[in-house]
Image 1 (cartoon, rainbow, N blue to C red):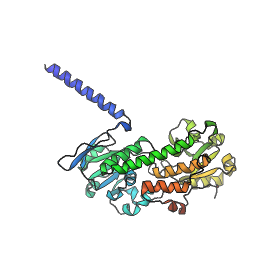
Image 2: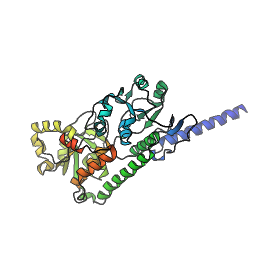
Image 3: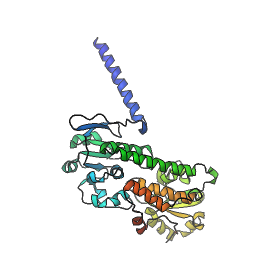
Length: 372
């Protein structure tokens, strides 16, 4: 009898393990989206982005955000007023992170609770938030941080690209956490519309009629010059663009041999403003290299407003996609005012339009002449 019980227990444990493993491998879209019924203690259970059931207050009015994307998406949700502590990186407003620029006055004097994804438990306890919002990119274990602080930790996926499942899942989780489900749904519908619009304008363009494109100056682990590029570059992905970096077999941002770019001789080149100083410095030394490129000779060099700062900033990336689309496919985007569209995107995600601030700082959609 004891042996039978042991076998039954072992079988149950094995089945549970297999079930949990299957859940861990399931796509984000399959994650349970409903909250568990509220308890009599004034708390409720929500399912976070790591499939954890987390008990949180019925109403969440104060949080701290840890790791890439946690604060950014909290701002997209219109919940920046609930933030009571920030990482040190977030105390200085920065135009390369528009959520930081727009909310800079709120964040600059808040207590510091960690450093770039590394939370300080003692500082978090001192601030006393109801909930810690932590992205999957943070260098901390959610359960350990919750145990150390006595504060529930809700994990969100964050996102290091444009409109992937992680972006949508982050909105879902934060909508439930803050009781802002309508806002999450509003953003989801809007972003779906942007995604469909960009794809619909370009999907029918035959592959052999898509100009070859190259993006340079892309930031990753610091600033890079002309060699810094990205395979599956977010704005290009949304446009079905012929990104030459995709042919390398690489994924994400990387450095490429500039001679390879010369061999490709792209029809159109886009330059990220983050890398412009390095690119212009190199142009002063190696102008013959750049002037040998057809895109330079033909005046086909254009800007991309930097969106990689503490990972990908969705607002600027989507605006960049529309501008790049107007350059690559002028006929398909003839009806789009890209500056107006950028303002719409910024206002929807951030609550205001800082495009003029970008322009005054030299970040704007325009053709680029190297060396100037």
